[in-house]
Amino acid sequence: MGARDQIRQRFNELSPALQQVARHVLDHPNEVVTGSMRNVGTRSQSTPATLVRFAQHLGFDGWPQLKEAFAADMGLGPGSETYGGRAKQLVGRAKDQSLTSEMFEVQRRNLEATHRQSEQALQKACALIEKAPVVHAAGFRACFPIAFSFVYVYRIFRSSVHLVDGQGGSLEMQQRAFAKGDALVVASFAPYSREALQVTQAAKAAGCRIVAITDSVASPLSLMADETLLFTIHSPSFFPSVAAGVALSEALVELLASRAGKPVVKRIDQAEAQLFESGAYLASPPARGG
Image 1 (tube, one colour):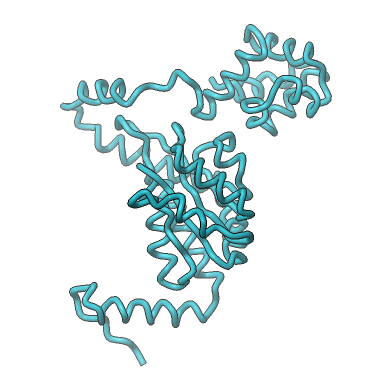
Image 2 (cartoon, one colour):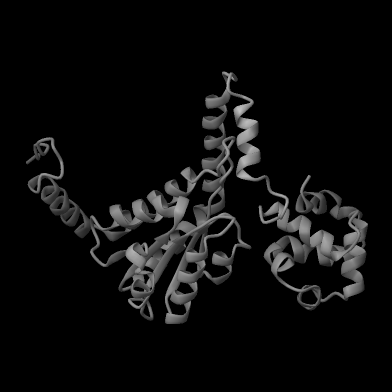
């Protein structure tokens, strides 16, 4: 059982002073992970001694151990399995007939959890992106498909969308294009990409608004973001899954198109026609109705 679930389960047995701490840490878990005990005490109007007593009442040796448990809940703990360790378990299941079924079942759960976590935030993210004169998107390593698919589809009906990929060592040059009022959509999950953090910091310094597509409200991207879209990365394989992250980027573009109104239909028609005319698509264009 995770630390937060344990607090919820034992909430009613806590004293009023400890319940006050419990409410605060449940509402602000990222503060527990990233802030000092003094800061959490000030924000929760509790003394450091009360925080220590709260942690010990839950069975932890002290506040640092409770902080580690919160980090583990968010997938930020140091005890995460290595890719090699997980691959070793995977190889041991080579003859397991349920392996692929398990993968698809986990992906279904990932999508359901991502939907619950980000449904409300998607509309807010759309509103932020719509107001920006220019939209930049970045994702590195495993998160590159998230950023690329967002840019590829969004550019079908909006030209002022650009991929930040750093090809040819051009990351610094691409960051120079960031301007106040622009939006950055950036994706990463733990362990977080150095380039994703660098791009987010550069965008923040330039005055951009930031939409983070990430795995935790305590991620370094989320802590700098104006809006956070959370996706779940669970996988029975050796590597975390980005399928739910790609689904988020597709949902984001779907909403942006739906909110753009009738003018978007003409732009999409024109883009599709150009793809056929240029020979990008091998098939003949579909017949258009009257």
